[in-house]
Amino acid sequence: MLGKLIRIGATVWVAMAVSLSAMAAELHGVRVWPSPDNTRVVFDLSAPAEYSYFALKNPDRLVFDFKSSNTSLDLRNVAKGSDLVKKVRTSKPPKKGTLRVVLDLKQALKPKVFALKPTEPYGDRVVIDLFDEKKKKAVITNNRSEQKREIVIAIDAGHGGEDPGSIGGRGIYEKKVTLEIARRLGKLIDAEKGMKAVLLRTGDYYVGLNRRSELARQHGADLLLSIHADAFTSPQPRGASVWYLSNRRAKTEIGRWLEKTEKHSELLGGAGEVLSDAQSEKYLTQTLLDMSMDNSRATGYEASKDILYYMGKVTKLHKKEPVSASLAVLKSPDIPSILIETGFISNPEEEKLLNSKSHQVGLAKAIFKGVSRYFRRAPPEGSLYASLHPRTHTVRSGESLSVLAQRYNTSVTQLKKTNQLKSDMLRIGQVLTIPSS
Image (cartoon, rainbow, N blue to C red; front, side):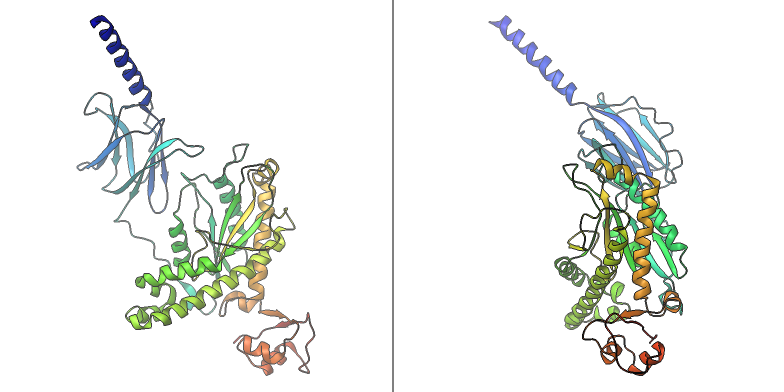
């Protein structure tokens, strides 16, 4: 009986050893992603690993201990070119079976550490975002007060860095496609007199959704374009679509902004400073935010129609009309925002197209033409574009000179003079130039 117990015990011990060995995580990759706001370091693991970390000074270091883990990586060149990380290396662990990895830093940094579960094409990860609190943020001059300012178009290349977005059957990453299209679109906009492009992501790194809106706001953007590629569980769906902020999302975001009184001045300028000090003026604040959001939604819808019109000339459309949606990137009360799905990367034919230079150029040109068409029709008051391309209006049924004069804050006399009209008669389809206020 004792012999049997010994044999059973040995079997159990071996089974436990195998089980523990199977659970051991291997560190099979370390990646460093520099970006304008922070540097992200990613530890790629073969399985979830229990870990801890601490900071050391003189010199500045971050030390990570992974339990039941190992690695055979050559880490010598991992941090090459990083502004914040001097070196990544292994060090003597506190006890057997623990893997110790050290980040030698160029200065003291504030870390944000978290684990991520597997998502294609990555497995388990531990992520470290390093922030340089001493770094002075670039002061962005808002030129809205200038007499002839440029129209600013913020271009958001979807996903990036650790977030690949959707992945096609050929292995093409959405983040790569969106950045290429964004770069091509930016060049077209910058070449247009009176317009200026601001790329919210200029390389392969991740920018948080809230940060994207903040950057667009800091640059005084007149329009935010978020470039994406769609995907579905089956390869059949195809075609482009354009989305703008839904009324439901608009109301939700207004509520959130109302709760953050420190954000009022960010949206409402000087008026926000006054309103933030008076709780009794909450309803006035809401009214102003409602007006701002209504204008953003209206602009988003009109610009979406123009973009969709030109995209339909270079690619198949999945949706032939702009679609309202409650999407995270479409949530700025003060900035007209549009999300452009350039096609289905999950469709083999469209994946190939989206990865081709000629199709990317075609899409960028179509989006640019749509943006240009909208702003030629409705240029911001006081902008250089307004002086180069006066606002126009196409007459519709039931409209008169007096109605249009009231709508555009001008006079019937000015409308007639600008358009050399000898009478008050208008015809449907007639294109009128709107005089500057």
